[in-house]
Length: 275
Image (cartoon, rainbow, N blue to C red; front, top):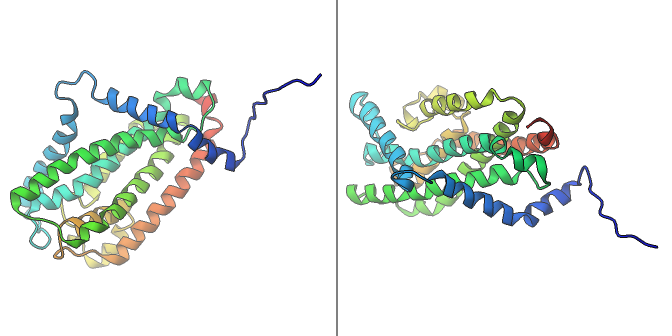
């Protein structure tokens, strides 16, 4: 007599894995929505935190670099806009890196009990950071209205730079998430990386102040290309972009994304055992 059997496969082929990402899409949306709700639950001012953090950072950087250090702006753009145009992608990257790196550990019970593509967890964490990113645009529009400074046609290229920022955050976040499962020391390293990266990236100043002979080396930081791209798209024709360095940043972002996915997939099968 024939019997129906359910076979649980220890390892699934690559095509099954990527198909499962679509099959478990409802889990992706559930985790993202849960994290958004939890992020601001029982807070006094709620979602306004997404506005306060970049504004305070922008004010401090404008005072330190613009007023005290007398750093030059680019073109006719007010220095505050120069800083905030960089704060948008940087805050998105920093939040995504922090959320991604801790996402697997904070969902340890889910990871160790049921099968689903683990890639869903850090990917959903980036959605939370993207919500903050969208909210911050209201501040930028308000600042542009205050200074009566508006972007030109280059604004249509902005989605490409947003995609570049997301790929940079995704690649780095996946790598850190996988490392954080095996080596818990990384939870102490991530804040240092974020803090250190803030000052070596051209957030509080224009990358044009970097000497010409060091521009290519400086562009080895992928966020340099992302930030320069945002400024080029938002601050008008007076803002230039160092294209050789930008191409290097783009290539490094793509390499980081590919390597992050590769390392995550390579170590994914051990997550349930070591988490």
